[in-house]
Length: 103
Image (cartoon, rainbow, N blue to C red):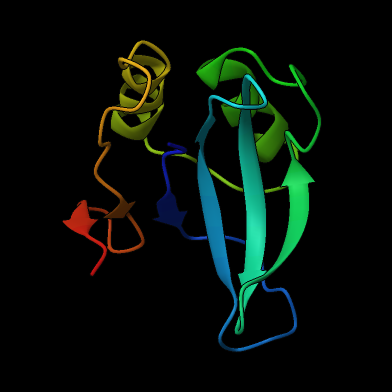
């Protein structure tokens, strides 16, 4: 199962858009997507198999685009890569600076 973390991101032009980062084990890549209402995804980074293999590389790609991932989130993403396949990974909202469960 992919991990999902909501983060502060650049304005997408839609007030209800969310920026999502995580690890996708099926594609073996870290990713960043902008999610619009109705589940429409726009890939920002990591949309192809094996594209971004390290959490710090994702952070660098996003930094170049004006987005900053908290260091603790980068560390958590590293651990999610090591999770047992099929294990439940909590989905968290980091937009306030402190992680809270996504309900």
